[in-house]
Image (spheres, rainbow, N blue to C red):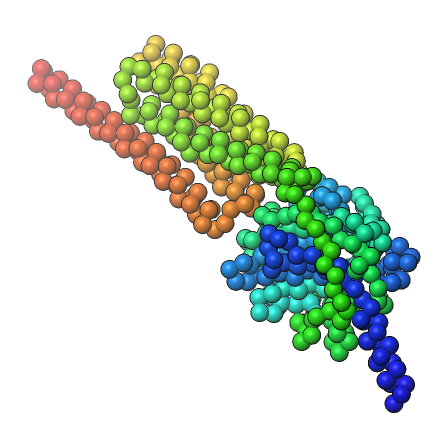
Length: 428
């Protein structure tokens, strides 16, 4: 009996000694992070550390994924992303390496194990996990006794996820920041699970893969005392300043290209179709020329974005480059069309190439805008629908106008032919 009591006291003392360094962003107090460094790891400088990610995945403040990373900014960081698994009840933890200011790559070398207490309950996701090689990784390292260790955090509020795929493509974050942990205040305890009480310390999730979490446990509180030691950095400093600039350039690219392909190119084509007097051809040329300046500007911004985000090989980038480069042919084709039309009094093969190439490229540009929204992941369902409806209305209206004027022209030609036949009959 005494031996049992001593063992229980020793176990409780071990758990009580497990301190947690905790942090909750001021931008979103429902998200929280905690870290514990066991005594053995703190002394040796390597070994296990324990990390917890908590946040809502349903309700008005739901997040599709929540992440924490070791490092001061994305390049060179060791990132862990948590999101609901395929069942919607457990958690997938995805270890990734940050190589730049773009979606981090899955890190198959990370030794990660989900622990008990992991799961989703009442819309709140909890990911308790152990990392066995977080003292160093490709691109960086961390001292487990650092009183000012650098960390980053992020989350996305759109595009609900339910997946076991650790290399899943995810939407770009819309919240992020950096902070420091005093790991000396998060040290102590044995190499157990510091996030649950001793009564529920068994039944961990799958080892090394981290693809599926354990069932939610009744007790998920820390057995030891908690020490809040995180401090958020300014949104305009370090990597965040780059994200601010990246976001502005992304919006500028989207705005400029939308103006070109959803307004000025259709406007120029409509002007040519309906006519505005003797100067129609020159107004058409001026509007289309301005649209091309916008398209070239948008392409330049897009190339910069694609290089920074490593997206030059995507459908959106390839279609955009081909479309804008092909549009350079429209100016000389238009001049030839105008010249031949005046000489021959009607359309020539060059005319049809100019007209239909323009229509195809305009339509491609509008469709590619939708692909860009999907690639950026910066919209939501309503945004995609709004863009699709607006682009659809513009181009359906434009092609309806073409059909109407073609039909009108054929009817007029038919009436003229009929009059000629009647006159010819009467004269004969």
